[in-house]
Image (cartoon, rainbow, N blue to C red; front, side, top):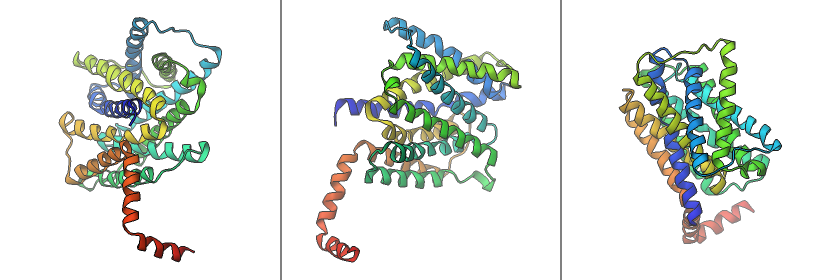
Length: 315
């Protein structure tokens, strides 16, 4: 495996695990009376100066070309919508289940890349999707038999769709790929802030943390699932492409479930553990997919008679 590919896989894994920390920091803020739009507004506003400092230290220019302005605006709005719908869903359903349901976005990415951009659909990708579907089915079973909020599910699906569009857009646009990662993220967050500010007159009032610890949660949201996760995601897409980056996002629901148990006090069952293991297995297969392809081919060669018989039946 090339060093650049390995770096891409690692960055995708870090991005996913970091993004899974969202509910652990956001839900305590809801308990203090804050609403999702305000939480995200502060999250993005705090992330902007952090990126600006990084850009200044690395001597990265803030200049954008005319053709880049519209593209960064689209990406910023897509990311802001994805964040807002996901954070809203936490108010209607278990955050671990919401983060797990969000992981339908790799399937959306794979379908988009195959049908609209003619990306090759390898057997290992299909195997990973099957394993992840099995893991998701196990993780989606609600605790105690209570029903899952339909509205909450719709919000998560909207979050998954807009995030999938963001990933595909970054991968297929030559103009976007030419923009330095940090500069791209800087303007994505800026446009996200514009959208959240525009939501205030529409009824999303500005609320503040009730206690000082709430500000620490906001700072953590700005650093871990925002700057760190988005930077790693964007760079991973540039190194290994949309589909592997999306599939490696399997670590996102795993980290979200773990933090929901340890930080938020939510329970976990044997089904949840097995579901998480299936998802981790899927990520392992993605990393070594060429090796798996060779293994499958080797197994097929071990049973030539079986394949000759199957070939006859298909003629």
